[in-house]
Image (cartoon, rainbow over all chains, first blue to last red; front, side, top):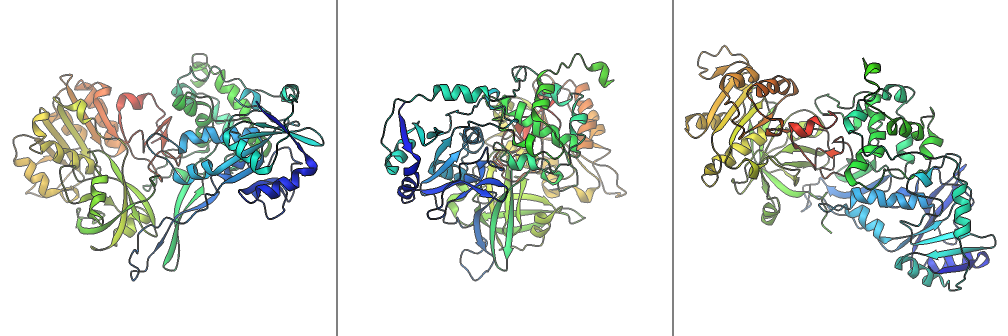
Length: 351
Length: 281
């Protein structure tokens, strides 16, 4: 695989070159944290971060997005009909995305890009994007990516992987999109440098792990009826922070919003933590208690997704939900309870 | 790329108030663009998202039959924001429909078999679609005996009363209409709850009979043991589920029961399938 050397002193110039053919996005400091946003003219991404507070999912699935506009004014010929808004799907480059967030897009893609239906907003934004990853040398204590199908130098989902090597970056070109970006930036100095040792060092710094190998073989109904959910959910306040910060949570709501006779049909991030998420018009709620809702989140990530696609769990081990949970619910513990659950052994406890 | 969120524009052609409490109305829609009707080709058991511009969308079973051309019909209970507003709309108003969505009753599997339809209350809409479809001259010979048990609280709460009366007169469908109770001396059909009438009138399974059940949870709960006694296997008992939905295409994430999305993998499931999944409906 081709490795290219990029001197940091040339970095700003390269971004200048890229800002023509690409809309540039990157992590910037936002109060006490870093988050992704579109970079202004001459604005530099700030790579001095462990990971962004919220994941990079908004690059493809914005927190709020207009699906359609419409008019309620009967004088207009197309009144009450949905109009598809103009959207900018010109090439965009997401600079400095962590490998976990990039891999997450591949997991989420299975939901939005299916044989039967394609979500055109998600698919177009995803296809327009070139993902320039930034390898992790300094993981958080809550990271468990290496046991969640990912890793600090993981390449899946990335077009280019940057490795910080002091006064320069080493760039591993992974796809045609990555090659195009390298060309546009004018990066051309190939090197024989090997990032393998740096990768192994980084992987050895990931201090925690989960076990998932037993999940597949267990019946969903056995895990659903396991006795540990009540205790697991006890402290949960259903704040939804876990779902909002998660790179693999994609659930959304659709709402019509009117301003006089004009309106927009919006989609907004939603969360399985909220009772309204599943409330029927009749008043019946199939997930009426927080135990139902906490169980749904973990069962979806660690069992339903696994069963549906047979492609691993719906988690990349970024650890955000662990760091940000106000009551210290830890997906690593829940995963262990699920993975080691023996329905035969606990019948007496249930009784 | 097709946009699966984009509704077909439709015009309200006719509105029929179905029940004495006026909470159920049937809306007959005509597509604004005739070619959209072909794209909306559906099978009995599927649903659509009714898009009331400025209010939102609601998932509603299709009450018309694929054999009825030139329009689609939906019977809507007045419940929430969108359905309440829809009940105030007039003929000629413009709105939208997305679909058809979800799976359908297993018509190919049921060919050459007896079919028992059990419906309660306003959950008779896709069952109407199914009956019209099966009774169509082109289709009737594909099915053996057809029995229908349909109950409502009172005679005035039955849907599609004129059609029920017509089906009663036919000899190629066995109707067992019932009401929970009535003091109407002219009521000439059954009186009693759906599970009881099913026990008295429904044919026992010969291993080749499929039962399709739609109704309120309480009706389903008490009908299931009756069907067990009549010898129906759980993979011959077919149910149509409802859950809160938004997208209708398996993406927005709220309607799942276990790994299945009610909107896309359902809404039609066999009881055998439901037995293997968490009962979050």
